[in-house]
Length: 46
Image (cartoon, rainbow, N blue to C red):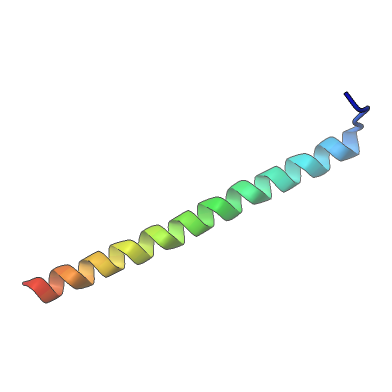
């Protein structure tokens, strides 16, 4: 195990949080886009 100090842990923690937020944002955009496409298709069908 390499000796990891507090600054490295803080940087890793911030990067991890940013990565999670980025993934959630992308998933949310994809989810909304799919829902909009499905709603548009439903309106055309009726």
